[in-house]
Image (tube, rainbow, N blue to C red; front, side):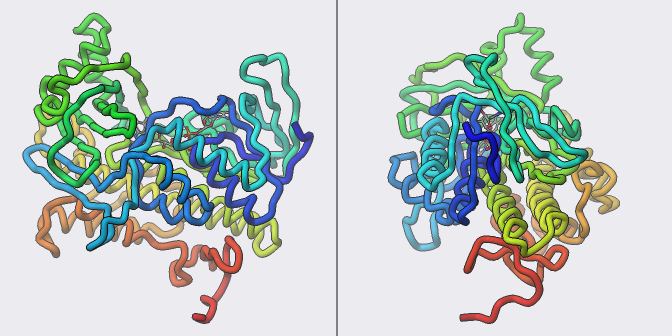
Length: 468
Ligand SMILES: Cc1cc2nc3c(=O)[nH]c(=O)nc-3n(C[C@H](O)[C@H](O)[C@H](O)COP(=O)(O)OP(=O)(O)OC[C@H]3O[C@@H](n4cnc5c(N)ncnc54)[C@H](O)[C@@H]3O)c2cc1C
């Protein structure tokens, strides 16, 4: 282990591996510490097409494409009485833009790729705590996961905390992680063999099917298993669990019995794993950056998995972090300027998706249903269009709410069958991505900065470079 490094990355998931890869490509010295030894299990198997351009940037896309993951043609949603599909393939082509992945394999590809690009990757070593000089993060105390008595210190110029839900900086030092009450959900899931294909929607689609009290995902994986998970409110989950003698399997089975689409897929199938469970997973840190450090991916914020946005946000924020830090290290911008850009742009993306998920839950209107809680939140907000009130903690640091408000209004119009006459909120997912104030556009500059990939990944100031 080095005693010092220019950049330390904590965590080797999609956010850490992507940030480290991009920074190594820019010629910086990067050390990445990963607590586990890969391959390791992880949930989050359904990937969005937006990851593709970022993996093309790191050079990992060809490896992901060649691996043999289950191609994902899109998503099939059965939400209340409605059925919708979203297609991910390029118009008029069979181009695959997204995958359903076994995360142990996927994450290993990304981490090995970072290593090949020159990142010093050390597995089986966790960061126990950060050291600060005043407000500035300057070093990390590490320890071996298997032999905690073996440890040491590594000094750094900058650190990117990509430690996922563990969130070393946010939970141990900054204490600035806030949970979203309306999304206090629980997910419980298992894997099945010999399931039938969905039989509708795009080839290899994720199926998302609502229940009176939650929803199920069904994700086909390339080892022939089907990942089937239940998402429900924490209180409802706890009530059911208490009623069923604490048996999580019984809670899951009872919910499955109310989900004909997934039941049909599981007819004759065999559950080949026990239940896995995660809870309270929608949160955001009040700040994503500070002197010497950036938080990326789940270490910064996490959104209910309804729209499979986790890996997208992880890799997108990693790209923003790498660009911001690269420009700081090259002396092109100050840390304060770059961090402001990073915080604002990442928060915009997160929040836009948060709004969309809220709207989506709201569209399922039955008051007796669990998601009426989410509906109440958005209805209050919509009336006033003062997103600040309920989303106060989420939006700390956002300079300009106009964007988010516009996105919200447009989605609302669509929901009401407004301008497009299309009541399907899912058709707005792509539009919301389009509506995103692209950080690549000079006209969307944040604090006078926008993101460039040529000639180097970084932040540019002022006018856009002349075409050609
Ligand atoms: C129920 C559920 C379903 C989901 N479904 C989807 C989905 O379908 N699609 C999707 O895109 N996303 C999904 N997600 C979200 C997805 O799992 C995450 O958003 C994604 O993994 C975030 O990537 P990351 O790199 O930020 O964090 P992670 O992938 O969690 O990686 C963080 C890494 O940091 C390491 N680490 C932690 N602490 C330390 C430490 N102290 N020192 C060193 N290393 C450390 C961990 O071992 C881990 O490898 C789902 C999440 C849940 C809870």
